[in-house]
Image 1 (spheres, rainbow, N blue to C red):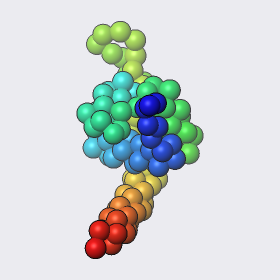
Image 2: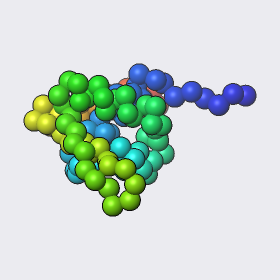
Image 3: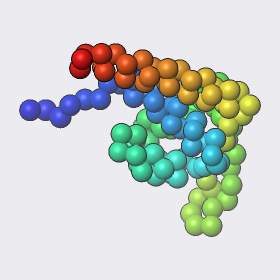
Length: 112
């Protein structure tokens, strides 16, 4: 049996909220963001997923970036939220909480 694929659109939305939540807590560079996501098995993501998402969020002016010299190796690109990023994070969180509440209620009804 082939490994089960995770629902792509649902996962992308959750990943966007996760990234915005992590950036709400602290400014992070890309590799550190990937490490933080990896602390949650359901949110593990590849560079090929996270960096394009960060680029899209930056283009939408939800996230800002800046370069900083690294104590080891090349400079690092740090990401943080803009005012629009905080607003988007709050809206996505509200939407996600409503969805999970409704799904929990629906699934609980089926067990009666």
